[in-house]
Amino acid sequence: MENFDQLARQYEPMIHKIIHSLHIFKRREDFVHIGLISLWEASLSYDLTKGEFKNYAYSYIRGRILQEMNRNNRYEERSIYPRDEYWETVEDYNSETPLEEEFLLSYCKGLTEKETKWVLYTCIDFLSIREISEKENVSLSAVKQWRKGAKQKLQHNIEIID
Image (cartoon, rainbow, N blue to C red; front, side, top):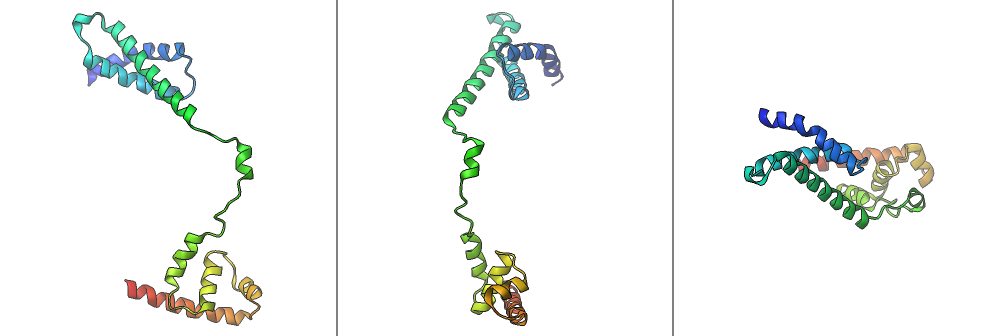
């Protein structure tokens, strides 16, 4: 491994020169990494009878970096990125959180309708006892009774599951 470390230090300026000559400014570190990987691959596949390693390494590294650039360009061309203004106009159609409600309702089996209302108001809408009582036009003590009954039944249901 020391051998490759020396090779990497020796050819790192070449990698930076290739990156600079290809006018790569975005994700520069990624391309340096690709250059180092391709240098390693070039060192493994080099054939002494084909010429100098320096020339072989240069063309191999440059080719791999160009391949990666082409791959990135194809990806960018095929991907659509809406402008920021678009995201401001998008409406949240899942604001009612149906999956969350279904999940909670699965635990509410055996609860009365009012106890189930307390669970949903508390867990989904994050309403306080006072807010629930105002919304349902009942007294605070009535909502507290719903809470007490729901907690007892939910605790019992959880103990059965365990």
